[in-house]
Length: 255
Image (cartoon, rainbow, N blue to C red; front, side, top):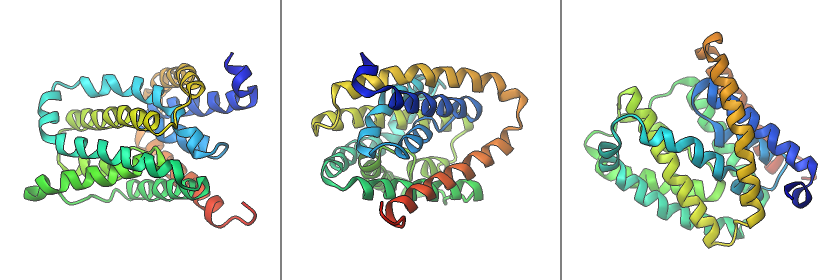
């Protein structure tokens, strides 16, 4: 049924993208929706690619969000960011429906490249301190708008969460919580703006299979690879992929 609706060539792209994205998630603990979306965007209209990451992102972030022992404390601290992000996602998805796909792909590639290069350089955002009360909703608004426009959950929320000085386990849980809430809000926003066709939901569910297979493979090899070196290579590759998407959208002749 899925093959009949989408074609074997597209299914092959989806399987390969989510298998590789799952592998990265298993090896370094992050990046599944981002890597999958970046790979899909090289072959698909971004508007068509975004719905495909919903089910794998939801499934892989539920456990990360609820495990860690600090869910109540994190919700109390981060609710202004999360609530405003949901509003931003709805507004961004509304803009997504009317904007040119080429522009959106270029914007996504640029954001991806900037985030990856900042991560490679290990640039540290200053701690918000007493300004956290005001900065959290602002970061949520920016992150939500970018998520609604591009399907990317990572910027600037990950850099901001790292700046809060949370213990490692709480930071991982906070990122999982942010990604989980953003995924749910994105699903609602896409459906509300008629950008979530039923066949895309089916293919997204199918994509969970290679995503989980990739994660299992990555976790199996995690202890045999130098994690820090792989993480650096991962961000450099992500920067290159983002630069390619931006170049193809803004600079490549005839595209």
